[in-house]
Length: 311
Image (tube, rainbow, N blue to C red; front, side):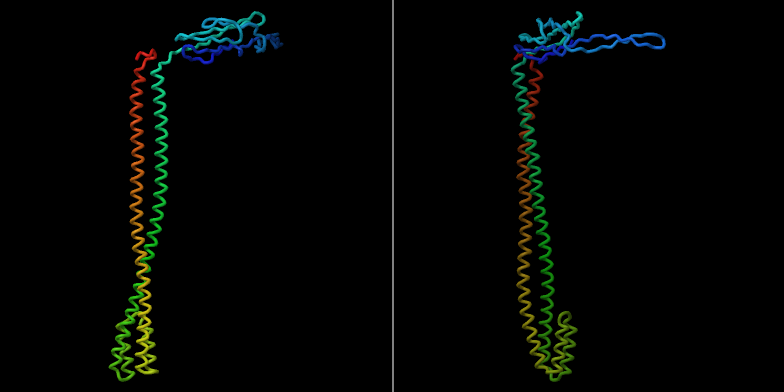
């Protein structure tokens, strides 16, 4: 016999369904087998469907039939017994137990309130996770931007240094040409002029060498005055190039300053962003803490709450 109840735990006034349709009959089939020591028989249990003829319920319920229902109004534990009768008058019995528990309204309300708070905490924890990921994404983007600005700033610095070297070279050339012109004005012969250019070459190194060599050639072929004119031409060209370089230097300095300010600005934004998100997350944590405190209070009330609703 097989019996079941649905549900097995109910509140007073609820209906329970009892079912015995899974019951079955077992017939014993005897077979004989010849062995060396003689004939022997074997028992074989065979399940045969459709042979249960009668279903009788007793105990917590009374009645007949494969299934039966009953409403329980009082608290307690109830046991129902199912007896089946098969063909050949064979019988079998089994039991099933149902528990009827009176629900405390206050207890149920407390449990519902606790479940609601736990659900709210779960959502708040997800919000924290969301804000943390969101913050990390934004901070990463800012860090990448700052890194780009740093590289551009370094590049601007290198360009300024390179421009400064070029300006210094032109300053040296201009000084060398002014010295040459001054010396040539008191010079009466080419050999003396060549000697002067040699001294100038020693005093002013770098980009002036090729100019000195050119002036030597002009002085030898065209005379001192022609060399002076060439020196004056070199000064004008150098001043013009120097002016262009100073303009470029001013632009690069502006780039350098702008990038410095931009890095400072975004570092400040980064700290501001961290502060804003910290406030958001701390606020949520405070909410969670408050809800957890409420849950503790509810747990204490639940522990003290009796099933008999003695409040």
